[in-house]
Amino acid sequence: MLPFSLAAMTGRSLHDTLLRVLCDGPLRAQLFDPHDERTTSTSDEWDILGHVPKESLRNMARFLARHYYGERIVRLFRHIRRLAPQTGRDPLLILGTPHARVALDHAVLGSPGTADEMVSLIETFLLENAAEIQNRFPYWQDLVRYQATMFRLEARREEGRGTCLPCRSASGNIVQFEWDLPAILADLASLNDQQASGLHRPSLLLMASSADRHVTSLRCTPNVQRLFKAADGTRTVEELGIVADYSVQQTEQVLEQMKRIGAIQWKASITET
Amino acid sequence: MTRLSLGAFYNPHLAEAILAHADEIAHLALADAPHPSDRSWSRIRPRFTLLVHDYLGQLSEPFTIHQLDRARTLVKQYQSPWAAEHLQRIHPTLDQSRSRPDVSLDYVFPPLYTEDLLQDYVHHVRVLQNHLGVPLAIEPIPTYLQVDLPQLSEAAFLHRLCEESGCVLLLDIPHAMISAHTHGRDPASFILELPLHRVIEIHVAGLAFNTDLNRRWVAPVIPDKDVLELAELAASHAPQLRAITFDAFSPSLQADTFLQGIRLMRERFA
Image (cartoon, rainbow over all chains, first blue to last red; front, side, top):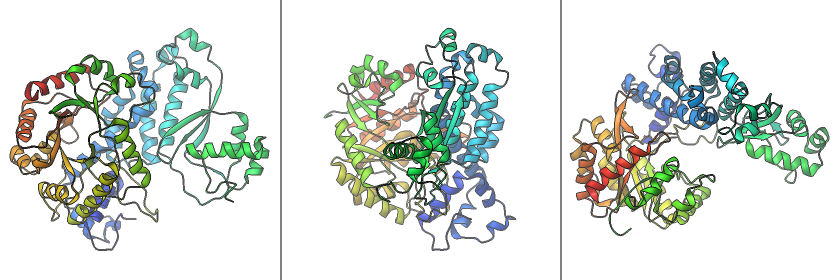
């Protein structure tokens, strides 16, 4: 669907369309493709933006996309970046590569697809020929997977389905790691090889991104894992409590916390229903 | 702040350098609330005048009660003599039907200077300002894209915004230089057309070549001679001016650059 209405154009409607065009690579391609059938139903907004120099629009869009994903790499790959002086691999460098330039030119800001594309580039950069790094930081692969999961989840939104029963959100996930990631993250800077080896024990994390795109990770117990898996929008709080071996009150508390961090969707609390 | 105050943005990673040179820095502008783990904050807070420069909301749209309360809380916490917000528009009108995805640039971007948007900005600036209880300083954002639509000039838009809403102006010199370049204008005459009598604060910052935009853009580097001279020109026409701020805020900013920027400002304005 094209990002304009048939109502009379205003400064606001034109600016809305401009913002959407800047955020959306495929939409920009439509704007400048006279043979694209989707652009034949024209509007004043579309006509005016079609006269903005293509190069300027593309440059600004790439600049904005570079800033958008650069900010996210700094924030969501911060632990990997703290090790960059020792590993020589700063994921921010990926934005300077020709592959990233292509990805930025086609990016849909904030979309799961572009996040996946950026993370794939970053993972390749961090994990390829990384035997030496893996030797020095034996939890390296887990750490990369942890940060990559955060990056991916941040781009996943709650679907906003109107379910009254708790339901897992696309912005939540439970991930098993070989290493005790929370303990490693707590003291990454001062962790030496001997200390790290003591942390080679599995950890289970509930990771989720809230509506305001704050990404959280929490240690997850088997009860919480069962609760999360069972929350498919068909079970009541009481039924989920039985699956998780929680009282109704405990189940409600855990669900409220999951809802707050974006792991589940739940329109109404049990008291409201 | 009774005299012209010289300061900078608070960069938490440079807190110790800032504290070590506290006698050269009168105020700190805060783009983000201090992180709970910021161990220097307890020493920073009482030492400097603090200016709210956080993201308060998009002034083309109605503010929620939560946004208004948060803004007022920040002003109270910092005891900020005024608050600043960008004259920007970074996300489109909220689509109530949710048929289109909510998008945001997450980076400053100017509005179109049209009559309908002016009325919206005037209204929401008034609402925010009334709630804050201190002056609201509006900072224009550089224009890079030229859209072929009848609009007010940036200067005319700002004159009317200030007059009709009662707000004051935060003039960022590099922003004005970039906009002047986009419009093929001489930066000095571009700046002199702005409502300088409403300027309460000036930002000086560096410019560096940007490979995406293929021209100079704001960067965390020291301001050059042109920037400082234009700042002097603007200051000489701004009777309400109370502060000049070195606008460099980035995790990559080095202490040397930060302190050199402060010194350059002090050479001109102290």
